[in-house]
Length: 634
Ligand code: GLU
Image (cartoon, rainbow, N blue to C red):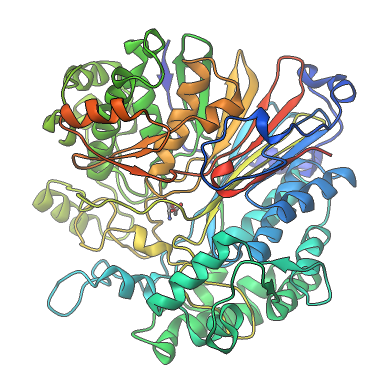
């Protein structure tokens, strides 16, 4: 057993030379060789997966096949990816096509106005590589920009619908870099299915329940700018489920990018429109932000290595690779798994008090540390080794009482005491000020006591016949992001900068060019050195709980991936509150309440898309029924 974390590295230039830069070739990994043909592309009936009785995916929440797999939250996006695979594209090509299609069919969850984190398993290199496309604060951003003149936090609705909330978008850059480094197709070709979906004479996009409810909520809150309202509530009436969604401006923007490349977006005419829109948000409402064309031109993705943690389960020993800072996902999932590992949870019934209670306490311990210590590691020192230090984990685990909720689990520990070299505080801009802030505040995180809503963002995953995999979580933060659409361009701008703490002073305070702390956790798991599964979810903080529970369901409780995804989830982070999905037995909810938890039953937590690589090399794709997702094999 052991855990470690590799240093953040930028891929060496060597890897960018010669043929390597290029593309995946047809080199097949042994574990997949010859497997595709036998399995076919059958789609299991819905009954093959244990339904939770939430929103119901009917026909393709589980798919099997060896020639590749696509799983996303939307049928038309999944089909765009499958078509690319059928036309000879690889997993990265397919993922990029899925992303563009999602921008059209689920414009409230992700798109070129947002950012995210992408993991790629390159079968040829036998490596997992992370493409971090998190949005950055513009150069003009200030630590106190979310406070009013009285020094009080601006209310969330006002904050998130404000130009200051908009981070410099990374999604399009990630798509471009990923295709250049790993793909086999041209970016323009991969945009084409999305153009066809957005154009009025293309295949129609029908508004589904999820989109309709998001539109209604944004109209009701007054979150949309007038441009967005014209698209999603034409004539003032919110589009409803079953209505058709036409996005001609978005189609034109996608055509421009298809024809001119991403330069149009990062330094050309679209960049100018983005900057003008963000700065001029006051024209629509409230104060504007200060993003400039220069901020867009300076943006680049980071190519890094994922965090990895091993977990020895009753059913499988796995190595979990997921994203490092600026998402908290990798460290927090790692800490949760390592806190729970010695409890041998498989000795209990999966839906017992003993399992849920220990999970909840581990979630609280890990979130107390998350909210105290984590931020963008380019700007602050984070105790990533201390977080996963075995002695530290032993100490923290002792706090868990097997029978009762303990307030001490909600207090942060001192992982810096277990961090080689101790703590220092790095700010490339103003070290003196940073040290002053660290001393004055004890480097306190400011985001406490907040229960984040679950359910935004989108996760999708692809695989191809050569064994390449993509696990990509993509977001514009809130549903419809800032509510600001770039006029004439048809895409929504994120409000990702609200993931910073509003109050200055902690590791996640706003700083120019800094990336806000995320919870997104695209994950690729290996077993005995070979890829085993991909997993990820939307849901703010609850992404971490969702992914952790899937991993435990598979590695500890030996569930098939469809069962693991369907299994009811619980969520708890900073207070006595716990959310539990309806499948958690009533008697267990009573026991949890009696033990001092404050449980409310909710319809759903998270929305997972996952691919399991089976022993014979075939793929099982699972799309969560909680949001009517769609898994399909070519
Ligand atoms: N902005 C959130 C994060 O990066 C994701 C939004 C969501 O899924 O709710 O953690």
